[in-house]
Every structure is written in C-alpha cells, then in structure tokens.
Image (cartoon, rainbow, N blue to C red; front, side, top):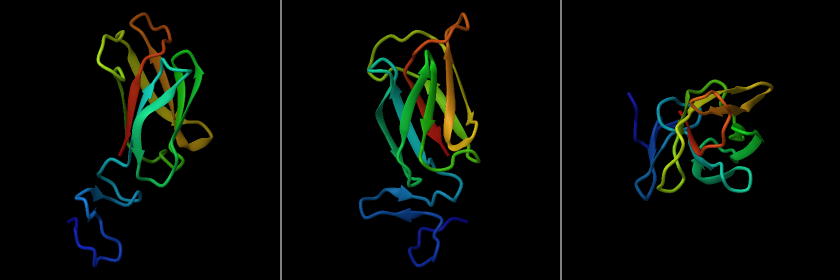
Length: 130
C-alpha cells in the first residue's frame, strides 16, 4: 500500500506544494523520465522532457535513425517504451522503433528507427522510463 504521508522516513509517494506527485527513483510504478526527440534539427535535440532520477538527459545521433539517449542515471533495470511521433503537428513517415539497453552504459538506451522497407530513417520519437 502506498503512502502520501511525509512522516514516513522513505515515503512511496509524496505530493509537492503545487500538487505534483513524486516517487523515489528506487521505487517502481510512476514515470521516472520522459523525453521527446526532434530528429530533424541539427542532428538530434531534446524538444521537451523531464528526469526525476537525478540525472541530466542527453541525446546523441550515432547514424541515420540510430540514437543513444542517456538519462544520467541507471535505466538498465527499468521498464521503458519508445513511440514515434512528430514534435509539431504534421505528417510524419511511418516507421518502427526499437529500444534496448546500451551496451557498457547502464544509464543509456539504444534507439533504432526504420521505415516500412527496413531502412534506417531519422524520425521524431519519445521515450518513457518507468
């Protein structure tokens, strides 16, 4: 059972003075980080996002349709999800996204995006870490 009490030495959930719900990064359940990547800018850039795990999020374009998103805190034991979608309203080419752990970096995820012909393409995407 979760608690909203600030008297708990390590509360499972806390409510901030502005009504936001927060959870320690060590706990499971709530979203810990989310980022939306604009793949069409100068390489790749973070359009918007947040990180409650205490790290600083960065994105690196490793090649066409291939990215590393580093959350600055371990994500290798977390659940995560990737979704394709434009940064602004408009049409975007259909594609598929694969998200997996980054070898030798527990703080990062490896992103691979391909079109319907299985060719790597740069498309905007979002990553959510639970």
